[in-house]
Image (tube, rainbow, N blue to C red; front, side, top):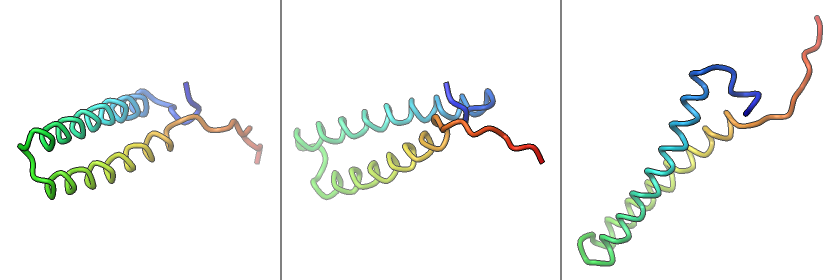
Length: 77
């Protein structure tokens, strides 16, 4: 797993991030379909796409922070 995921809570946050990225991809797909069939105006599609990009970046940063990190042994003080 990961050295950064040290608790059940961390694992749950990480898993929810994975699910959220999947849901975000579904939203982007639905918005594209709606645009193509004429149910969503181009300007609204651009706004949604921009917001999805921002949210996706935040979720990926969260996953990166909880993801694997190189092992560094503790130093005795």
